[in-house]
Structure formats: C-alpha cells, structure tokens
Image (cartoon, rainbow, N blue to C red; front, side, top):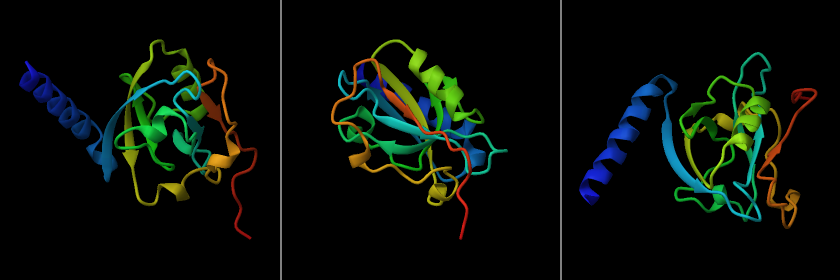
Length: 153
C-alpha cells in the first residue's frame, strides 16, 4: 500500500511538472497545514508589471506553516495552484480571496521557484519583524497592495 501511495505522489508531481514545463526552473509541490496562531503565514504580492497577473510570496511569518514546510516556501516563489485551483495568471487579491475561502487545515500548494523572481515582485520582501507576534485564528494571509510600482532612482 505504501509503495502505491508513493507511486501516486511521484506521478502527480510528474503531471504537474509537465503542465507547467513551459515556465521553466523549478516547480514544487508543498503540503501545508494551517496553524491556529499563524495560519499559513504567507504574505502575497502581485507582479511588478501591472499588466502581468501573478501571485508571489513576499513574506513569511516565522511561526507559519509555510516557513516550517519541508522544503520551505521562499520569498519570491510564485503560487501556481492551491488544492487544485489554478492561481497562475490571476491577481494576488483574487488569489487571497480564494485561499481564504478554502476549508480544512491541509493545503497542497504548487509553486514556481525562479532565481530572478524577486525582480518581478511588486513590493520589497517583508522581514520577520514586520509580522505581528501572534495572529488571530481566522487571519491566515496578509495581502500587500501597491499603489505605485517600484521606481529606480
């Protein structure tokens, strides 16, 4: 039985990698369990270029599930899917509403990890010090919205 489950997991990852093969770099599947105090511990941001829709991780709550995952979620990762719902090509605000509406403590997240992804994130990464010590149970996601994209001076 264990071998069959492992085979299904490998086949599932292969299917996901084929689905997103055109995006390049690393596609990862991560399982997160929402914590009562810090939720998933993700802060989301959109793409620096407002004409491109994307959902990037711009911060991780140190006590959240995402920071403690194996492998851990990283700032700059792009969220492609959550529990089979495709978020690739969506606005980060829309993605937040979808994620908040999901029931249950277990989340399967498909991420795209690119070396140069931080250049595409609309905001500077959040530091652990910018997160509250404890979050309310119902709050599991912090959304960052930018009025003006970064400008080089």
